[in-house]
Length: 170
View (tube, rainbow, N blue to C red):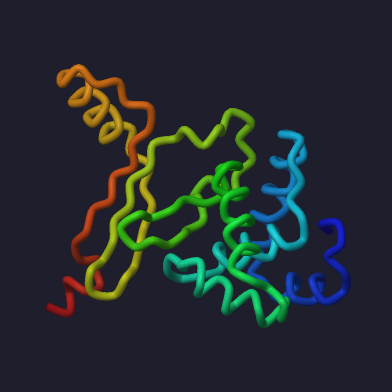
């Protein structure tokens, strides 16, 4: 249990899907190894992002967080999101100005410095957002940048289209 979580936090966390609870434990261990602390608040924000079916914006997160922490304010959420981004536990989908859990957040990879290639597939009809990690795409982007004389430090690809379910509906 994260420091200061208390019985209310324990009860809320017990209601989470097993996959989210596991991802939280892995995140806690990863933060500890990095010398960072996944506080109760940061853990709650991460849980909200991980259990969401779609990317969540900061104010949607704030609304959900207020159910557990009535005094929560925008700076509280933004600081937690900044920490979670720095630790590689979530990604920001720029197109949507929203946040999603990293597909690797629930895996305990010591080498994961959040530098894994990631691309987002965003359905323009239903909002479904999938993270894929295709090294071929990352290589193609880096190669194109190099041909232009540019050294890419980081690239996130966001592809907008239609998911399989929406495409099947016509």
